[in-house]
Length: 144
Image (tube, rainbow, N blue to C red; front, side, top):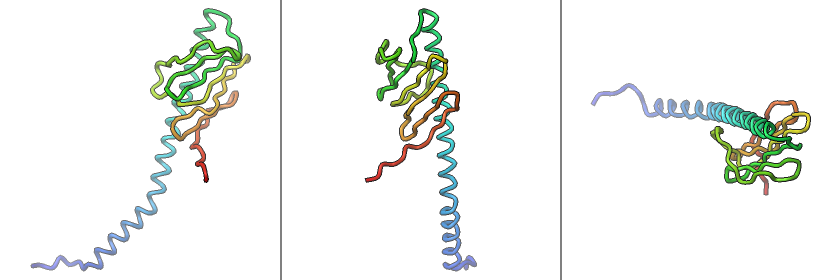
């Protein structure tokens, strides 16, 4: 048998170096995946506010709408629609949105300002105050 020219220690050193590289790269890759996920959910939540604006516009073309106009999302992918505090639609589905939240609400006030509160996608929560951009972040983990 011929000698390959490498000792077992050289192979161990190569394996250890690869392990060290993986240890340093893993958090960087994890952060990139998290940021891409947040960006995607932010885009979906923003599109959802646009869809609520469309719902309001369609309804306001048929009659006068009372404010605040609120869409509250349910865990089963449906929504309840409120004018002021009166529910006017219950258990409806929104079409055209590829991913519906499992909680939270979007409100349009009398000044046509849109706010989003606790829009929930798995472990991500999105909020938007009046005249601001949608901000999404991971829910804080509960401590025992």
